[in-house]
Length: 90
Image (cartoon, rainbow, N blue to C red):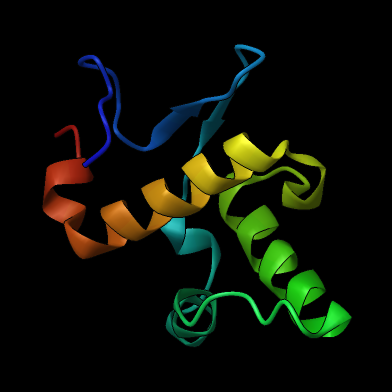
């Protein structure tokens, strides 16, 4: 899992210092499977759908994130899903 420096692993610190908290319960299992399939870069609708699902997970418009921040958030979402127990601070 990406380094969290002892912080809640569900929190992502963006380049500008803002913190986003990832909440996988904000989407359904079917939506997560759709998100996990990745982005269809050949389709504007595919990109928009991916960003809409990611936006639900982080509570902010993911389409407005910088490229590196977007990549960090996507990576962290997949890391948390792969090992949810490790991501639970309790």
